[in-house]
Length: 426
Ligand SMILES: O=C(O)C1=C[C@@H](OP(=O)(O)O)[C@@H](O)[C@H](O)C1
Ligand SMILES: C=C(OP(=O)(O)O)C(=O)O
Image 1 (cartoon, protein in one colour):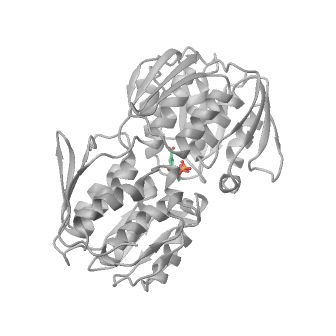
Image 2: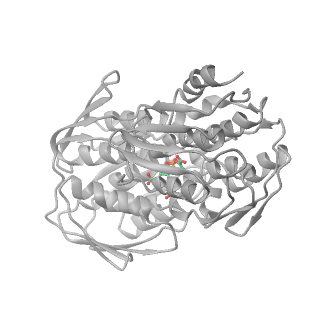
Image 3: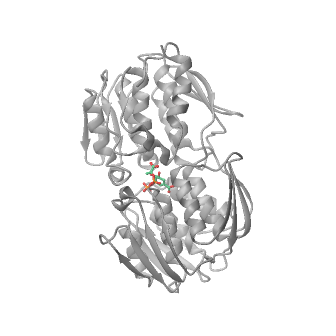
């Protein structure tokens, strides 16, 4: 439950390590040859599952949580065990990346997941791996977790994958393709934002593998490619930082999140440019970006394609009612397939607060208004919980049901929020 800020926020704060970068770096480190030290790693349910999966596959992984580091000893593309059972929890990244990695490795692999992840799409990736020669037995429902992969390794030289449901399918295959010792090409079908694919190729480059792309349609990975072990600094999570920046937007104050910069690998950084268009100002200082919110009543609605930073659709939806004109969030149809049906979660929770919002195909329309007190149904979705905590800053008394679901990517978000609020709320 929240109450009204008494004065604008003036905040300098740290965000946890990036989930997307941590889980990519874990995969790249495991496939590199030798010891990689990851600094600034995230420790949350998603990365804890990835770490446990690597251990269950036999990798030597040493975690130092207080130091935010992980040491991974990679075996140059080899998996230590020939058969293993892993559980990816609710992490889409672990689910997709490790499925591709094991599909490329000779062995028998049993993969299980949380009840939430069992409902999320895997079929496009499983179809591609089947086309490449793997046998995959799904144990509950065709195209979903849990399943067993029987792989003899991959000898084919090209594959096609449909990324309409998730760009993680392509990211997974790109990173895993380095395990093959021949040239490999991946073609895509389906539409999806490319920001996370660009993150993948940028990180592959940082780990020493250069791949070529034709028209964002075909990716070629050279047969002699190999990841290099190294010391690697993980960026803070911009998707998590967005909730702190949202506090500046709604309180009219300013918030600086340390080490967040506009040259981030993370596409969600585009949210800050969007906030600028809505009336905020952003300054990239050596310490991090400082966002200053507009004076009360000066926040403008926006018509914005968020397909390449759709994790922030919920943040935008929580803020949009306070704008002086309607907001259109476009190109986000795929968020129906994430931790919850996020389009439905937006409309349902806004209407509980008396705000008119409507789904129009792949877009959402939100009218300005004054949200009233309501209980937010989180559907066990961390972003629903964290995003609507922002609405609570302007609508005292909002209740977030099951706030602990934030543990997926930001374990102590509500403790941090509480500590912030002590200074600003009456
Ligand atoms: O590759 C990644 O790290 C991610 C890709 C996106 O998922 P989709 O590609 O399924 O939209 C994003 O929503 C998710 O939080 C992280
Ligand atoms: C969609 C998300 O996660 P995942 O990596 O499980 O797809 C998310 O973090 O908003």
